[in-house]
Amino acid sequence: MDVSWVYVKSEGFVEKAIGAEKVLVPLTDNVANMNQVYNLNEVGSFIYDTIDGEKTIAQVHKALINQYEVNQKEALNDITFFINDMVNRGVLFVRH
Amino acid sequence: MNEEDFTLNIAAVYFQCRSLSPQIHLDKFGSISHYLSPDTVITPDYLLEYHVVEILELSAYKRVFVAEPETNTLLNYKWNIYNGPGKVVVTVDYSDHPTIQSIAAFIVDDSSKITIHIVLKYELIYPIVIDPLIHPFGSLLLLYLMQRKKGLLIHASAVAIDDKAFLFTGVSGIGKSTMARLWGECGAQILNDDRLVLRPLDDKVMVYNNPMPYYAQHPREAPLKAIFLLKQSPKNYIKQLGGVLAFSRVLGNFIQQFYQQNMVANHLELMEEVLKRVKVYEVGFKPDHDIVHMIKKMDLE
Picture 1: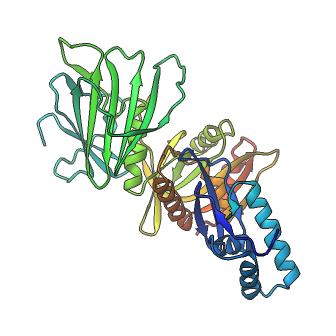
Picture 2: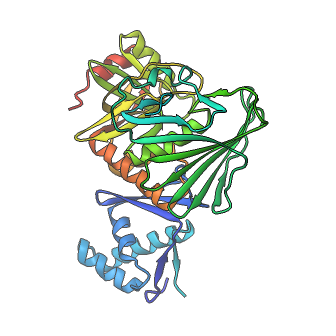
């Protein structure tokens, strides 16, 4: 993953915040698939909310460090893991 | 009120039913008979107007869902959902109903009047009597109309004792009916063992039964104290679930056939309203009265 990349959210999900966490419900042909729901923990939710189709990964990284006072390497690992997972599930994709 | 109109009270939502065609009489003695509201002066939440039409005019709508036809011995049908701007149309086509070909409800955002069109299979000599909530049309209609009144339908059983209701849900065959029966044996009232309506109202959530296609039951309601997700287990345990885990585990048990993103979003909002007020527990149980006593002893406040 290149830190200059920008990620966009798929429109095929309905999100619901539960406190600082989040549930993502996939829509297939506009039908909610309640059996394939994704749970995001607090950090996942923060990364997901920060990704807006404009910010680069470097900017998301910086925001995460400011928010949680984690070290740079750990923050980048979290972001890389989260984004790879979300890309595999069709939740996020790279903006070209 | 016209002379033949009647009003149903389902989950404290009032539905006035009216036939506008001489060919159909709406049946108040079938599945809905116990839900007739004795109160005739209230302003209904919905006015359901039934008309006989030659054909269903749906060209202004886009079909967004076709249900897989289910084969069953009682009644074969298929149903569809259509969307238009600010409108949803629910249609059911009956392949082996003796007189009804199709029935469709036109649900318009912000309108309390629901126009229902019925296409008959042939011209009738005598009027027919139909159940205004004919299966499965009635269930679909309730689902959509309840959402607008902050009501959710859930596949679950529920029991009430001392004006406290407990709801049990989980996958089919997990023991929802068994759990209800155990409570019944211990003196609790079974609200229903298949489908219930939940409505967050003020600081509580009310749970109601609702008309079921194949059995008659009097209306019942109680304030909900807890939701239990059932697991079969060699020994009894109760574990509280919180936050996103509780939410996502309960999610799949709510009935939802919404084909618009905003309706799915509303559905999730309502679920949150419920879970803010009622705790969720996972309960493993073996089917005897011990689990009833264990739950009764819980401190749910």
